[in-house]
Figure 1 (cartoon, helix red, strand yellow):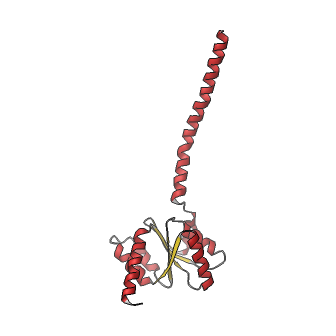
Figure 2 (cartoon, rainbow, N blue to C red; figure 1 turned 45 degrees about the horizontal axis):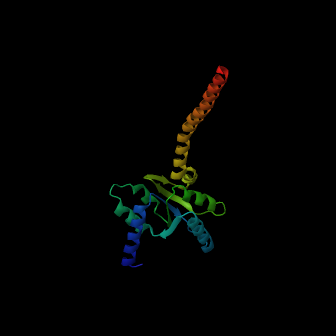
Length: 175
């Protein structure tokens, strides 16, 4: 890869890292071509982009967009074969990794960056898979907010029937 190609890859990675609120750094080496294709297919189905990249290019891209040092902890995980999983939903790559590893030993999670939090090591896969996505959290909040409103509406409706019944009974007595 010549210098121009490397510069192009770094620019592409910079754009990806700048746009991504979540990404995973994994090791998917030692998988056969068929297994890698199956992993890519699974990632595609879950809207995850899987890129195999050189560590030096990843580090250059991260360093160029991070003036505050927010990616510094990730640099230690940039050793050996590396693939990056870019995603919109923070927990989907962890779920894909768990699902794929039911039949294979890889990919291994090196690190994950999720909304300014850094998770290091493969033991974090279960924790990351258990995270609720933004949509799930919004759904939970809406359900919590709806519950008291439903109770109030239900009480008002039942009270209206009681009052109407009471008025009708009083009216019948009066006649």
